[in-house]
Image (tube, rainbow, N blue to C red; front, top):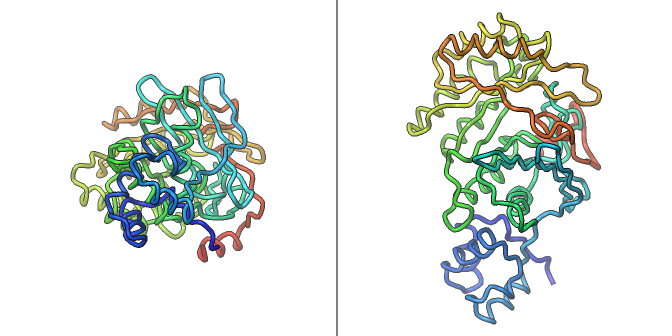
Length: 360
């Protein structure tokens, strides 16, 4: 017998085709989406609005299989970091962040990352593989249904391990499922895809979805960003910001792009850096999210001093920008921004990582 198909990450359209191919009406797709993504049901036998024959047919050819939670750590602030085991044997990480008015899930899109941003622990691990849609949406399923005592997720950010736009189709499929009214039904404002700045993929993203866009910028000068975010050598700042403006033009209802800016002591946190940032962003509708650097083993960067963080934010505010300083959450369990590493079995580094990413 052929291997069963994991249909956990199927979009509504793909599920409709799946049911038509097995001689069933396509409305079965929305019924299945509700069972899985709204009720957390993975056993076909318990889907009682399916006939007995259909349940048997599904059991013979398909499965609904999320990845496994291998380990969970709980921070003093209530943040939970999960080590998620993949079929490959490697593990990724996701982070659940509870706040007063929302519960945010930071999910991974790749096992490792080939882009080697110097502030990020994931990039130091190398790149192993792109995650499937099953493995991406499976993280949200686990966050909502693994522990019945946890409140459902209200916001999702693609800011975990990996560069989301280098795993384009599975990320898009997962985002569509998150928005689907028969699945998680999250609004476009509650789903954020963050990218280090891959211009062709940003333009492609604008054609496919209108979820919130975040740019991992971290410097306003190309010379400095070339070091912090090496992909800048291929896609420099001015071209990147033009792509952001194009995204906003296509999606008129989207209010702004979020600019993420890691503050690293003595590297990019001076008032002069803030001045340069205000100059390059002056024509872009944006919100600036200032993120104090989170240390990790093997990196000699240090977090900016509080007085410098406050001065940086004050300068931007005086220039008319909306800027916030992200509260560091989960750093005591290495679950904060830039600290996720997972556990990779076959990661590649440097040129090999890029070659593996291109062929993925």
